[in-house]
Structures are given as C-alpha cells and as structure tokens.
View 1 (tube, rainbow, N blue to C red):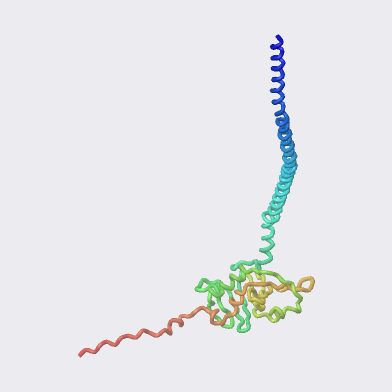
View 2: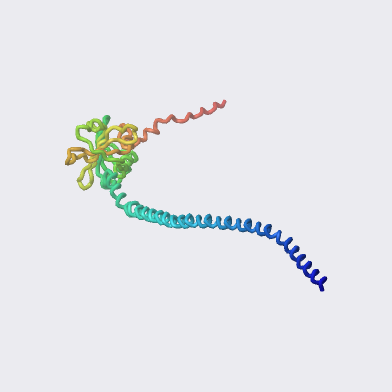
Length: 267
C-alpha cells in the first residue's frame, strides 16, 4: 500500500507536470488574442468611412431634383414666351410689316395713265381702251404704240414694290438724298380719278436701294418720310424714248438679202 501511495502521488505530480507544460503555451495563445482583437478597431474604423459617404449621397440626390426642376421651369417659361411672342404675335407683326413696306395699294388694272419724267424725257403713257395690238399708247412727246413689256415692268414695280425702311428727315435735307430735285418722278392717274406720285432720288452708300418718296406729305413734326426702294425703279425709268416705243418692222427690213448665185452661161 505504501508503494501504491507513492505511485499515486507520482502520477498526480506527473499530471501536474504535464499540465504545467501545457500551461506554458497559454500566454502564447493569449498573446495572439490582442492581435485578433486589434483587428476589430480596423474593421470598426471603416464604419465611419461608409457612414461618411451617406451625407454625400443624400446631398447629391437632394440637389439633383432641385436643379432638374429649375431647368424644367426655365424650359416651360421659354416655350411660353416663344409661343406668345413668335407664333401668336407673328400675324400681327407681319400685318404691320406688310403695311409699312407696301409702297402703293392699287392694282395694275386701276391705272389709267402714267407720266414718267427724267432728265432726258417726259413721257406720257395712256391705257389703250380699244382692242388693239398694244395695251399702252405713248401720247407725248410723240404718238405711237408703247412697248408693252417695258411698261408692264414699271407697272409691276409700282403695284408690288415695297420699301425696305422708312426714314424721317427734315425737309431741308431732301437734297442730301437726291430728292430736291429728284432724279425721276412718276405720276400715276387711276380710273377713279385718284392720283399718286413716286419720286426717285440717288442710291444709298452701297447702291442696294434708292431713296424715294411716295405721295410726299409733311408730317406734323415738320419731317418728311423717305423710303428705301429697289434699284429696279432706276432701271425701269432711265430709258431712251426709242425703248418706250413698240419695236417697228424696220428692224428686220434692213437686213441684207442673200446673194443669189448667177446661173452658169451655157453655150
């Protein structure tokens, strides 16, 4: 029994020794725990970074609808302005524009006679009421049928002609625009006994338009309206008398006759 007691004590001491050796590893294992635990703050440290992005995302989404709303309101406002100013206002502006630019309001068939006065000639034209070869007759300075295409060209300008702009100038400045005296004067007599007058001055600085007056009248402020009209008016009136006359047959009568070959003499 004494031997068994000693063996039991030795066994328990061996167990203690074995456990003692095993317990020496505990600090190593426990020492690794702070390393593992040390990583936790790193993981936790990322949370504020993720949370920090939230206000940026929220702020961006809050600003986007506000900017988009402003753009939509601006587009709607611009569309409304264009509609009322351009679409609905166009007929009214065009009506005013047409009235401002149209020189005369009569039709070609309303005209009974014309008097064209230039530096070279004073020409009286009258509508031919009798059925004939020409619509217009020259009454002075000679009596002859008129060249209808030439007269029709001038008539078309008088009926459809428009002014590009209207200038209001003092009456004492008419000479500066070539209107005192004028370069040409056209008097129009209508079938209803009404009369109109168009006076033509000199071209503007770039020769795109002519200064002109239509039915000259003095305005209440003492000024006179001056129009800018097409330079075609100058081409229509600055002609020689022969151009106003109907071409005669003598234009082809003076052509040389073809030479007839002499017949060969036979013996």
